[in-house]
Length: 88
Image (tube, helix red, strand yellow):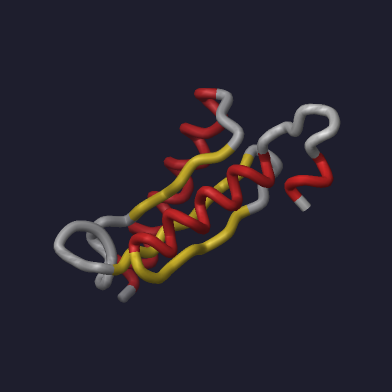
């Protein structure tokens, strides 16, 4: 519905503002009121926003979403010299 779209846009705007205000590298926006997401379900849907303006939507089991967030954060993390090849 139109209200759900408006709420999603507001949530992403709030997440972007918080990302910038706190100087974060990334933030995860999680609408716990969305169907199939949040409390009482085995699935989740989130949007990860980064400082560069990139964003990625993740959905699936809560474990799959957590793994997706971890993979994204590992790609964002600076790598100590000599460990580049190990991560590739």
